[in-house]
Length: 162
Image (cartoon, rainbow, N blue to C red; front, side, top):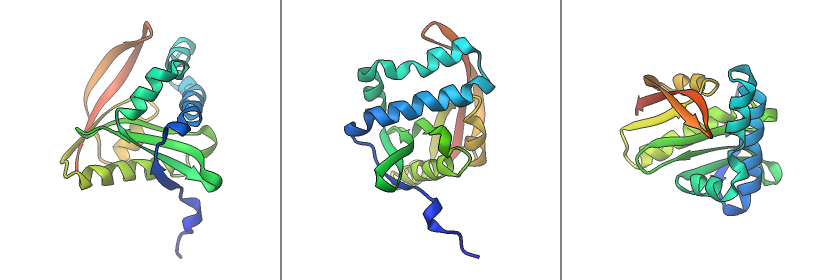
């Protein structure tokens, strides 16, 4: 039986007019999933990044960022890849999680890397995004302890050969 294409999101490039909806996806995905793996203090620090909209916009624009959208161009997820093959972001709206949206975005980022003829991808994944990267063949090469807004986090440096 053929899968319905209606369940898959449309993907398009990020535009500056998407900033507020992307910030909302970032904030709410961390607030919803973060508490499963992180302290209240960590979730508050991490989810506050979009409060500095100028820095948040610069982060999005430092990569080629793709948006997953539903009908009426409603953003439901996003992911970005930098020139060197570093995946800098992968977030899905909480209402759309566990529906294949993250996988669709990551597939798009991998296709972009292949188009650029890159051979290796990298990312720094946090606890709740690590499984989707592992599903696509990423392996942990290092465990880092970092500080963000004065709060300690552990993240996983991951690489994949494509």
